[in-house]
Image (cartoon, rainbow, N blue to C red):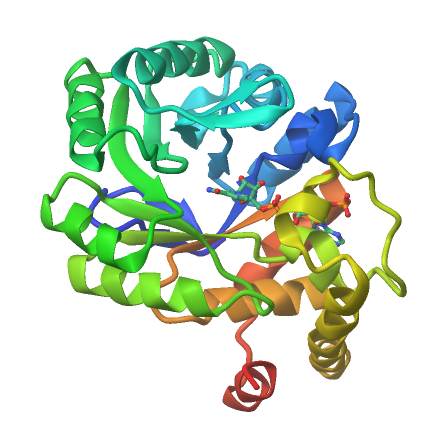
Length: 305
Ligand SMILES: NC(=O)c1ccc[n+]([C@@H]2O[C@H](COP(=O)([O-])OP(=O)(O)OC[C@H]3O[C@@H](n4cnc5c(N)ncnc54)[C@H](OP(=O)(O)O)[C@@H]3O)[C@@H](O)[C@H]2O)c1
């Protein structure tokens, strides 16, 4: 597995990394069996994947990842997050110092570890300045509970100001063939400040694997419904044009569409790694193999149209 250095962290992360959202099951992705989580994580390690991303808000993702990694903590780099808190059927943005402190302690316990390699602000909290949030996170770092600080889902102008403090070392942002624009503006900032870039949603929840001939019938609370927004009506039909192009390249190159979608993300300048969710060892192995694929200039051009 190819690795790249994540910004100024000196962490060498696998270019294809495991996104742990779906492993947490819950209302977002539906029920999961621990045996499948264990097999998926074992497949990740077997295929050289060394970064696993999770969050307190991803169902019981932290717990199952922590359990599956028992005795293997030193083989992986773990990223988790703070700032989103479930409140009944709502999700609150909460980055008060006491909330960060509570979430971090829970993450450490759930993940069965005494440090988090990469701790990310999941979303900003409109009630708390980002400067104050960084102060809290510096304290967590001084306590040895987190090693590196990063941020997700911030506009480019805010990221630029955060980067100028020198406190953050990486960014997590959506980037896929179906969602390119915002990711690109963020990549520009990352390039200027040597920030690592973890791309998320690279398969847009699975649609870019080309497996849906028609729009799947998803529960309202399913993550693909409320988060990815390309599974319904006209959006699904529009996405199929991109999916068809991905399938064409896959057929020509004798690889799978999911691998084309991931290889495209990895070919974007400044991307450190592509986080891909996987539910089973086959998906994990398929995704990991995308690290070896180099798309031609012609393929990249066709896909980027
Ligand atoms: N920071 C943030 O705000 C943020 C937001 C979103 C995600 N993330 C991170 O990014 C990670 C990746 O995003 P994601 O998990 O939402 O979506 P994704 O990686 O775009 O898609 C993952 C889903 O696609 C399907 N899939 C995966 N590999 C496949 C393959 N080879 N063939 C066919 N289907 C395949 C699986 O679902 P099925 O088997 O059910 O089809 C899997 O759960 C997350 O897990 C999370 O760690 C971060």
